[in-house]
Amino acid sequence: MSSTALIDSHCHLVLLQERGLLQRALEGAQAAGVEAIISVGVNLEDSDRNREIAEQHSAVYFTVGWDPQQPRSPGAAELNALAELLRHPRAVAVGEVGLDLFFRPGYHETPVEVQRESFRLMLELARDQGKPVVVHDRDAHAEVLGSIAAVPGSRGVMHCFTGDAEHARRSVQAGFPVSFAGIVTFKNAETIRDAARAAGAGDYLVETDAPFLAPAPHRGTVNLPERVAVTAAAVAALRGEDDDAVRAATAATARAVFGIGGDAGGGV
Ligand SMILES: [Zn+2]
Image (cartoon, rainbow, N blue to C red; front, side):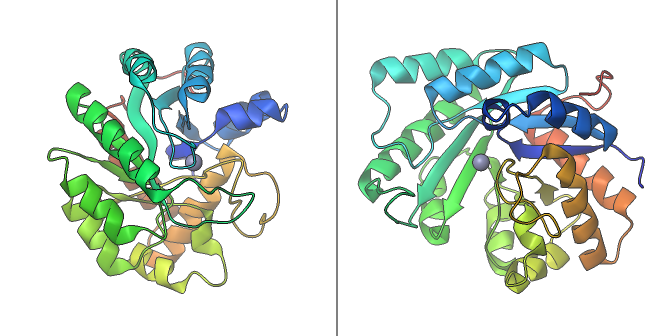
């Protein structure tokens, strides 16, 4: 197994904590060489719970988000609270935020106008505090790029990238390197694999989105941050590169995007 450290650029430790798996997740990540975990918030309360975890574990950083599934946009008091939380020294980004046009009863049914308003407010919050943005884009590639372009100076990462190589190029051009999740190992994901082959060395990251999207051969199980190593290895194989090269490149990109140090020591 590779000894080069890597970073899980997107996971939900609060959801693992709710399943009684936080300690297991952190220990497994450390054993797998994961030097940092970005734990992502989906609303104000969830972001604050991620803050608590980040305060207790030196390898964990958190983000402050209002995701597109929230049924309404943040009000003034909530925006103030989100802004305050973002000033925390371990808060590294706004996210996840974005657009989700995959409407299904039981998944979410938030009207697109509400999503657009939430996304705009959060892009402006990130711009005002000079933070990167973790973007959630489901079935909304063109609309997401349009929203980003409407708030000049936006930068960040396209989380759980599901576009093609051309969309990846456009995203990178817009200041958003793309992050590959376990989906890249799924059978029907040839378009995403093409994007992983074509991406420039500094233009992509890897993530788990744990507890969701476990990569093959773990598909269907509760995902864990340690499995970012599986996705990194899959991307390395696609690119014909060493695991170590992909681990190092993606960790460097994650450090650059989120402004986190390379040798803070510690481990998870
Ligand atoms: Zn997520």
